[in-house]
Length: 533
Ligand SMILES: Cc1cc2nc3c(=O)[nH]c(=O)nc-3n(C[C@H](O)[C@H](O)[C@H](O)COP(=O)(O)OP(=O)(O)OC[C@H]3O[C@@H](n4cnc5c(N)ncnc54)[C@H](O)[C@@H]3O)c2cc1C
Image (cartoon, protein in one colour):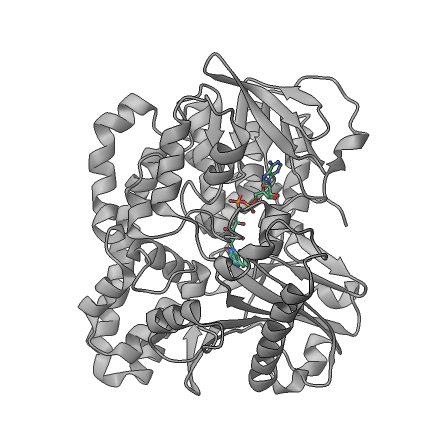
């Protein structure tokens, strides 16, 4: 199902109050809040054939797969802030299916460690695995909490107008920066001297793409704590997210146009005035919000002479792109229940030292895959069986250095030549081997398997290095003051995963902060107010 209207079918000439470039969750959130809180008519322009960004799904005969949503924390608790935000954005149209209590299972060197929902259940399970390290585990959980407590001021500062941020910013950022300026490894090694425990507690590092020696503890803590209470999956698959938010935008006269690639954000006399899309049509509005990522926005969308462009490009170069990935999309004959698939994600690692595993694989394609993540979307979505009876799906993901694929970057999709296909075949075989080893009942039932590479992400999502999480989540990223919605260009705002953090929740909060910056008021309390949707 396509979400949004193709640009070529759009005839209406009524002007819009704001334009959003890109329909990821950050862009949709900003658009829906502007619509609901200020009655603004917002035009969302999406270059892909369907709206949703990384929340979209794609289909092959008999199957469908999500591309960037495997599990979301907090949303199964009706009173959590994230759930209330989704209820607000979708006017209650979006339903969630809680996952099993064991949301993640870590497999390292043949040993299994289950991540159980609920902070105390998690603590007890980890104490059970590492009885000599109980104090270290408690210290780790305390560090997650301390980081979370300090984060509100850091993220709220991003919505403040420039002069106020200048005066108050240092203080409100300081608490979180104490955590975020350290690597995850440094903080964990302050809690425990057991490298196996460090390896287990950081085994979800694929959720933000960086092993513990390179990631900011601010990012690790945000993600690990997000999942501590367990996780859920959208009923109807991840495309339900955009499908349920779009009517909120449309109710105020807004629209999402797809197959609508923005080629230029037009800037006149230092102010954004509209956009030009591929094919030459233009749309005017006094507010333009980019959800396309800061790198793409300043490298490709604004004119060269735009004020501040050089500084943004320097910042993008300093922080660098996040990791790229490969994903094997597998379609199977037999339903999830018939094949005994559960909702638990598997994280398979060759050893406890994630930094060494990643470095070895970056240096040598033959080295063990540094991380393999196996997800069972058809088991997570209670509506999947109705849409695709007697079928099931699995996704098998690993990191894939962009440099290994860069030589084919300028070749066309599906026409990248034999060497590229051979590289893909080798990777496909390795991922299938992992699948058969860890999910043996899938052997003999695979009907379809298609591999995406970093070039697929580049082609479909417009991230230049095939990066999945926008700018990298290193300590350096969190020190950058320019990662905020307001820009030096009047009327041009930024949103999405580069503003707060990666993740559906992170990008969504980016959208909330952008809407606050546009409307010049803190919309969070209004949005969280209890109401009859
Ligand atoms: C493999 C993978 C697994 C993930 N798993 C999870 C998970 O389990 N849980 C979780 O919380 N998060 C997960 N994430 C992360 C999460 O999906 C993202 O952080 C989040 O969705 C990003 O949202 P966004 O609004 O920043 O932008 P995006 O979703 O990246 O959307 C940006 C949109 O802008 C469009 N665009 C770009 N340039 C233009 C242009 N010039 N004109 C028009 N449109 C343009 C793109 O086509 C895209 O649709 C995963 C991501 C990936 C890739």
